[in-house]
Length: 222
Ligand code: AP5
Image 1 (tube, rainbow, N blue to C red):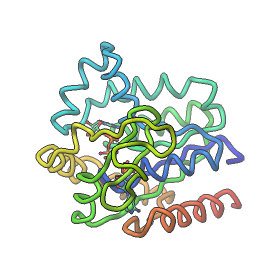
Image 2 (tube, rainbow, N blue to C red):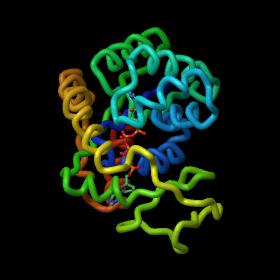
Image 3 (tube, rainbow, N blue to C red):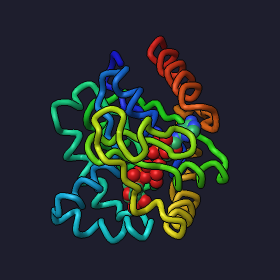
């Protein structure tokens, strides 16, 4: 990315935001900021934030906006965000989107590029219940569609693959409900700003990746 740019991946739980963000961030040379990963890290380290957000995440509910905004604002001050960043899982509510707009105005960022990843609920359930994540490097697998070469072991670094606590059936339905209520309306918010692109994310990982790279290249060429 040539300018100071914020790139946002919108979409429901399991749409493939994390999978694609890891690929695109590398290609664009900006950090991948996943608010979910940041909070899981806080939970694992037992920080004050982690103690508050852990039980909320376990229930599949959204973490309060003030906590999320404070965490994001601090992260954006780090030098690696000088050229911009790629958000995955943020913003997730209207107040978060408005808060991010204010941060971008203050920080001299250009308009964000927002891509909404659309997938049917049936596929989302398969993706979420089949997901396994490397406990060392965070690589994402799926026991149905993207299995590791050796069962339970990461191809890249040999780390143990684990299932996320919030990928249990009852929590997944709560997460999907939170998405429908609080996050889905953001597509309209960004459409009105003229910065929304949509991608059919039910296609393969490579096809979705190619569509995203095409969108970024066209936006960068403007
Ligand atoms: P977060 O970690 O952000 O989770 P999420 O948004 O629910 O999204 P996921 O990580 O589940 O899915 P994804 O779209 O990244 O899919 P992935 O690439 O892994 O949030 C977790 C919790 O933290 C929230 O519930 C909330 O409590 C809290 N939180 C986080 N941010 C917050 C915020 N801003 N405000 C308030 N609370 C917040 O892929 C899923 C699976 O599908 C994988 O197995 C993958 O291999 C597979 N897959 C991916 N793409 C494809 C494809 N094209 N074809 C086939 N399989 C695919």
